[in-house]
Length: 112
Length: 115
Image (tube, rainbow over the protein chains, first blue to last red):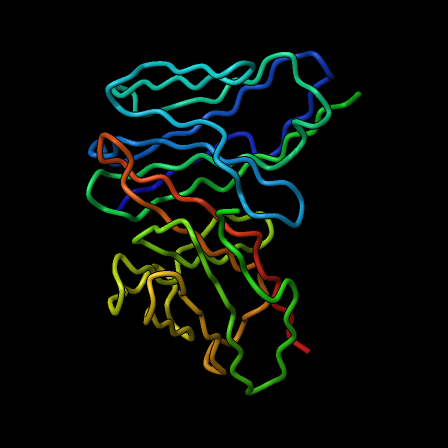
């Protein structure tokens, strides 16, 4: 089955700096990669996603890149703010199969 | 107001007791899922259902049971056979977007504690 690895497990950045979270996946058939943000005591919320026919997608301060050859994808957050502090999960899934494999999460702390 | 609701927010279980976690969605989604989240770990799939009256085991189904009698509801029962039930339980639902990819939307979670 699919295996998703996520790094780093914790990340501290100064407010205004950029943060990068990286994930690798094992199944070359995976073609959909969502990213979720989870605040303390709440359910994960989708923040951005990318499909395998696209190499990069951007939404304001958040961007995701995908390298299908290397089987890795990354989340980039620019101009970080304290409200960006949360746990971020990457995930991978295959079209037609509604099972999603999640990474183990990255706890991001933005220091004011 | 559309969304996924889970209840209760906190649940306490005694030894040998079965408890049921509620999950309801009014998004008209066909598929629903239950995940377990432990500290420092990712989300692990317990059960999922793609359609009413049908469900499949996920990666850690032992000690759990589900039903899907209505499209809107997917309750999870944690049985006495689950020896380590303390965790944060998340329900999700999904539908096919344009382009035939699924995005899962999550409820607020239920924290289960053992007395």
